[in-house]
Amino acid sequence: MTTIIRGGTVVNADRAFRADVLRYGDKIVAVGESLDAPASAKVIDAGGQYVMPGGIDTHTHMNLPFMGTVTADDFFTGTAAGLAGGTTTIMDFVIPAPRQSLIEAYHTWRGWAAKSAGDYTFHVAVTWWDDSVHADMGTLVREHGVNSFKHFMAYKNAIMADDETLIKSFSRAWELGALPTVHAENGELVFQLQQELLKKGMTGAQAHPLSRPPAVEAEAANRAIAIAGVLNTPVYIVHVSCAEALDAITRARANGQRVYGEALAGHLLIDDSVYRHADAAYVAGHVMSPPFRGKQHQAALWHGLQSGNLQTTATDHCSFCAEQKAAGRDDFTKIPNGCGGVEERMAVVWDAGVNSGRLTPSEFVRVTSTNAAQIFNMYPRKGVIAVGADADIVVWDPQGTRTISARSQFAKGGFNVFEGRSVRGIPTTTVAAGNVVFHGGALTAQEGAGRYVERPAFAAVSAR
Ligand code: URP
Ligand code: ZN
Ligand code: ZN
Ligand code: ZN
Image (tube, rainbow, N blue to C red; front, side, top):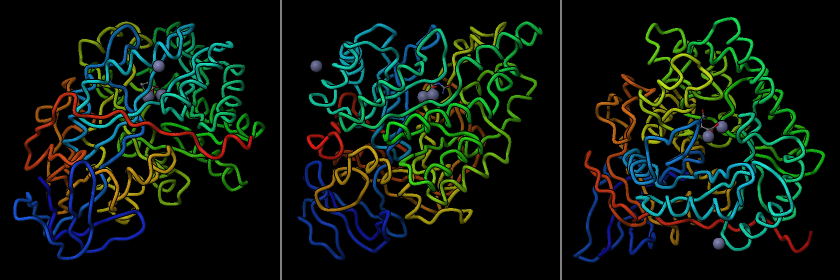
């Protein structure tokens, strides 16, 4: 059985053009005007719509055990929610506990992820260091298709990587042709600010952003970039939330350093007024790190995407329900950090990006899919509508509208940081690995249908 998507405008990162798209098996087999298709082919009418590569969310946490609980979305519900929003691949994180073997953690996450409805791949966190970590990084790159390693510069007394770990791991990643990535916040500074706030009696969720001001993020971003510069490694900074961290990236790139930055849909759209809301549960629902920032930071992040100094958009989808957030009712440092968004990213970035004229449709494709595929070595299997690419396709109605609400979302957790926001530009059909998994509002995602995506190492490592 083949599928033909007829009459739409294909949008790739480099150009947009009128074409039909023919799918056979899990691949795109033809792209062109007025294509012939077998009489038995399933026809999807894309008249008046865009046909784009499925979204890649470079940053999610499904089924994550974190801060004493486990995220509301598992790999099935989380990837299914992504498919409903036009995201066909997620990049999730294996996060070994300190002293835990990386390989053991990797296999644990692979087990959890087997129920995914959409394709998935893993960054692996380096949370501690010894010779076994050095060896395991090699095994992960050579045998398991891992080409990016994550370092949390925050979360002291838990998963924080100290400078020794950063330096040794960045060097090892370079040897292996893998990309080091960082959560840039100075974890010691966060810890000390948290203790001071608690001592002053500021125990509520409103204190969360005060413990993580922009300078905390900027210091870590500058430090990671400096370490990467000395070691001559590239570095990718996840969830860049503030102008100061973006400035560090922009400066380094202008100096010729290979530094990448990721913006979250939440940080692009939501400002810090959410922390001044009277309802403590509402405030706790917005507790994530780095926190939401003042409006001037959102403007800076959009400029980062427009200028190319930020390359990807993600969500950091890490949802917790109200009962889980309530664990920190009397101590904000115990509120599980994280918010959702995997289902909404494409629509809110389109609405605020393309409808406003900040991004062209091709630039939208670049920052929601193509750049991620290229930076993390999945291109051209992912990130493009072309012959031979995976049939991961979203048919996009630029005039379709929707009002976002936790009441109608597929994701779990019962909360939505984009609650009440109306968007124009929505997916009408999502095709993942050749299967129609979302059409006309109905989600038909299949548990276990997602595939693990191996990502080979970069460059000719043998030359090093
Ligand atoms: O608050 C957040 N971002 N939670 C998820 C873990 C992380 O730091 O990415
Ligand atoms: Zn193995
Ligand atoms: Zn993070
Ligand atoms: Zn994260």
